[in-house]
Image (cartoon, rainbow over all chains, first blue to last red; front, side, top):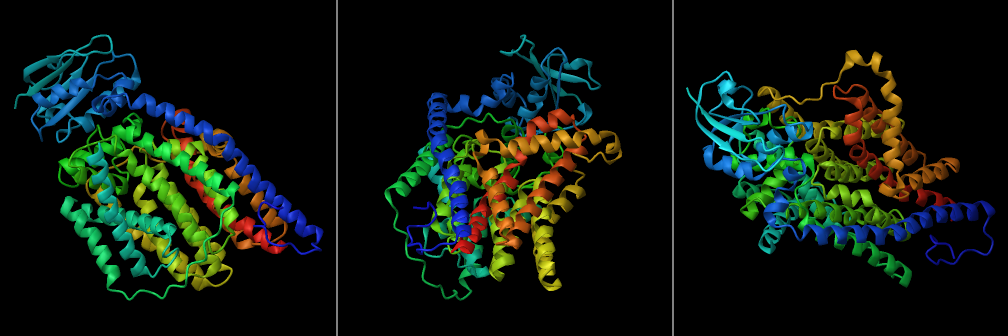
Length: 167
Length: 446
């Protein structure tokens, strides 16, 4: 019986062309189903395996995995939140001493979400606070005080600095 | 976690209610009184909410819980004022054999394990944590759109439209906190609703076995589940485009006026979801208009008008807001370099086709679509559907290739980090119209 005929009674004399068409459609449908049936256990196994792995993560670890995988210590931002007041603006910079460009890009990108409602600005002189990773903020074009040095778990132990801009 | 799931589901029930109103307002009776109809209603509600939420945000609303409830109930109410259309009885349920039951169970099992994983999915995908979810958080913490955040040097792709952040912000508002793990359930709901909604749009046109095989293959396609769990906008965009594709086809071939109205809703949603939506909607609208032009200029104008309405609702207000606040994306087509970068065209096209035809990502969805196109073309069973699929797929792919050709980013990096995702919409669009092509071949053989 054809896979697509739904069991309908086929006329006794079907032209060859019609049989060919049905057979070819059968081939298309069955090949799709065979691929799906063969793949489904694999997809299921991958998902179960991932669930077994990710379910072990604490909610905090799961919500910070992106930062950790990019080489950024997410706990730094928890400490920055306690230092920089909400709705303040900040300028953020990273040192070239941090070798990985991925990590260098991830640091300000992670800050965008985790430091909200604090908002980043493009220039240090427009900021209320300066956040730098890997170098002291005193060398920038603005005068700062209330300097905080935050130890970082990765990489290379370079600290994060947070300082208030003096107006 | 359970409380967060319940609250996220409560927000989604409101999207469903909004969909009920919009469908009644439009006069859509696709799949009424079936579970599939409910899935379509949910997607209509999600799309409508997302588009209007973006408009509200641009207009200065905070999109707080009251705004979300008010907007969804307003949409529900708008539908209730219209007299319901007389609904023809739904087709008798098809009695399934043992083999079909087994296939359905297999697909359901895959979706269930994907759903469970979505509850535990960590926030690890770069774009999700770097800008999609921060944008949603900003809408909550800064009480609506704050141009300072979207223009900030740390906010990537500040010009990307707002449907997804608006939906996520609504979820966060209902949860009362930022549970970024449970948020992944939102994407699973979109995936399940997509698979659930297809029968409502295709069941009256293709025989059940074709429809079921499509659903089983889609459910088991590794890339669809994987990308849905990434919390990126690519799967919602592809879902909106695929549904818009089926609706466009219904308007073109079945001459359904309601289908074109729903098409405009989903096209607007695609435009409000991601920048690539502009390419795909342009490809689909122009293909529809071009094919309809062979019938009459009026029909062609109808398709263009639907596209225009979608653009006016889905992207123009957001575009105006971003320009008014000097917010620009980082992608600027490098037109001056096109001549010296011709060598990019080949690798870009090859990479996109490679991902689209990758059996480990999409099984045999595209080869099946290609085979269906060849069969329908060879026996000339459905030239309009063939033209629609070929034109939309090739023009979508062409526009994507042009984007890579003119990319201001490192070409290899850009291609490597996005080609597998941008092909989802064209792949799904071909996939959902494959049963229609196969049905035309079978009908010609009956």
